[in-house]
Length: 295
Length: 289
Image 1 (cartoon, chains in turn brown, yellow):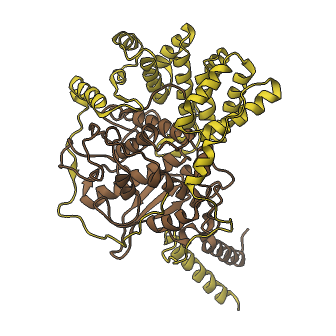
Image 2 (cartoon, rainbow over the protein chains, first blue to last red; image 1 turned 30 degrees about the horizontal axis):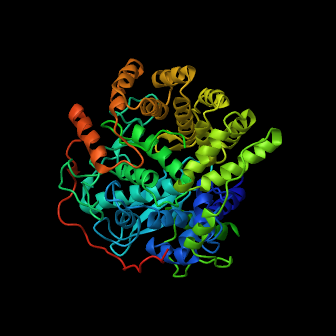
Image 3 (tube, chains in turn yellow, orange; image 1 turned 135 degrees about the vertical axis):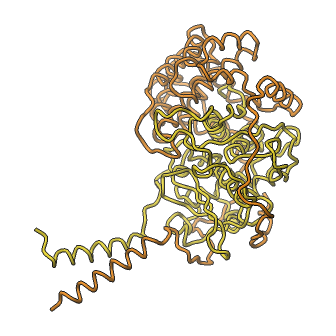
């Protein structure tokens, strides 16, 4: 039987435990995926880049302190993995007018922090919540910035999405939620998407089998000049959804990268793009990316 | 005598704990310091890429443990290889086609790494597929027979472990379709009809078409196998690597004409007015590559 004294002691212990809850766990920090390592080897921890990228992505020590902020060349940690993906966005695309869906200028502005035609000013954080690959939270206070968080499934090497392309693809996806928010578009009530099947056995929403679904607003190559991805005419003829922007980015990584982008980064980007295209769109699948030739 | 102060202390601690729990996990206060490392600064990427171009691929041969070592080194090289080295990789893989233990080593690597390092398993399967080895067919069948996990980490409604295996199985389908033996083709068509994952079924359709030059005959064959509700995957637009706008846009126009039902409804506004401007600070350009 628990006495009053014991109850009081228990309350104190529980309370102190909750106070200490700020020291939360972090993602799996024991390894990096082969694709991450391959891209890393192309720059070998380029210090000038991360000293630029932390500003470009408005990252702060207090958010990344136990994630490699002061160990920025340890590619097992989240901060180095984040800037490895930023490096891919900044330098990795070929930007061919003949062929690419969009250009580096689009993908950079969408992922980076400063406010622009693409979104309001934001900052990048990391989250241990396995709810999602990424999340976008609009600022509550007028003086704050929007929060773009990337979560552990983009960092843990065992996860299929723990590669530079998928991580950078999430910058695009969440950045596009910032675009929807900035211009006041409603993309649905399930985490900013239309509600698909919420539990196993539920029927798909059109062709979408995921819990959050988008439309694919098909457009040809060259329909958007580089830098004009943010544009819309307010109709389905000229519009994008978050998953679509992500698929188009991943396709550009696979199909039209700079010559030096490692094959493992491209292969992982293609796998993510095609899986996403097959599962997350209501009105049929998105484009299929790249040749199915194995190598 | 001590009961009252202790109770008060408990109440204060409980209130503080509740207040702490209501805060976001990420602290609001941010410091202005920059990231750092103890590692010495290395050369610029352009210099490293020059070194990479001088790197020779490891030999792909051997039996037993030597084959395993050889394949592990080859995967390391191939994972970092660039498009300029793609033909070299293909040539070496074709030359090793008859080396059964080398093919088996690729299979072993894929199966071993599939739950530890997804992109390494993906590369191992891609290389095995490019080999067009009889051992590859057996390996792909083995991988495709693995049941999809029904429990695991649920992220945005999908089970991560299920998607991870399905994407590897999709790569195995690419290998089977590229192999092109009657038994492999039969298996690809069976997967179009019966595989539990849409990721794999969609890839099986795409790979079958690509390996049959996207012919009308191949489409007709696929329509006999495709699941109800997935017929549109047979007409899905593929952007081939290296394809120019004219070619891709023509295919897209034909697709949209044949399938007017895929046009999305008009997007919906929730609020009117111009965007709120919160531009933040301006950035310097990124460092020169």
